[in-house]
Length: 119
Length: 262
Image 1 (cartoon, each protein chain N blue to C red):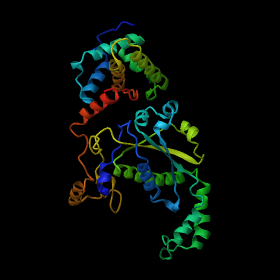
Image 2: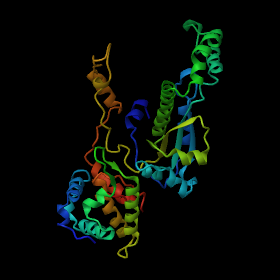
Image 3: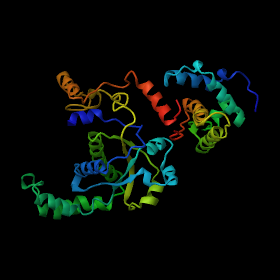
Image 4: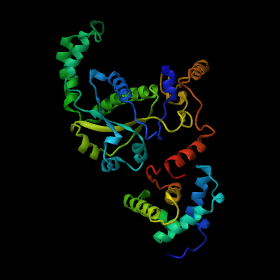
């Protein structure tokens, strides 16, 4: 994995995530440190830092409005699904939580993702 | 349910009891409500194909989903794929004369078979039928289809269902349901029993009446009478606006129930 330049909480995308969790979802991120741990594991899984995860889902061209990249988002959704299903840890609920934590991170950063029902 | 309450209770429901089938009779009631809607030149512009989600194979269901509507499509047990039929102007001549025959279009207002045959059809309707690709013609047809869809939605709410209009990817629907080429895809009207409370967080924010409606001329707001507003609150047409205080907790509970992200 590329070495993280600073603690996860200091990345702009992580700050955006936490702000969204507090304001939109009424969830206090500090109350559950496992969120950051799972994000860190996913960063290691795809070899990207948190801000790069978001950028990988975007189409950024100078002088144009930034768009969500169809290919980038699809690839990320597949990586999340792999991250979720390949985990040897925990039961189905725990695996679902792994995937949804990463989805939550991206969604609060403006990347629309839908996983479908996971019961 | 009283009409005003039906209007007041309607929400775009985005969480359905995906496991609970909808009685076929309730879908029939929705379709009848659409069929009876007001329509220009007595042309039924709205056409629809009802699909029970569980009759679709997994691959097709996946292909229908847009990034935004995928979860709605997956959760709703009934999909009503709506189309605007651009061929509906055809035959309007005969249908208008039928309205003359049944006493809907009358001499009192200048209507006769001869007027239809010699003026309305050749001068107005025939050019519309032949120019269905003009934006104004398509807009008028889509407007009528929208009226019919709205009646179906309200009938669904009256039957205790949740309803929501969503976008869908037209290509796979064209492939599996085979609608005629002249049917242009509109929305999929999703129906099912709500998994969220019927309030769904409260009545959605809308601009005040006087901001969007005018009296006499543009710029002169149509001022609402507070007594009427109170009457509509009593009749449950105007309801507590969103967000209700417990909405975020409800969303969390729904997320847990369906295994969705927070």
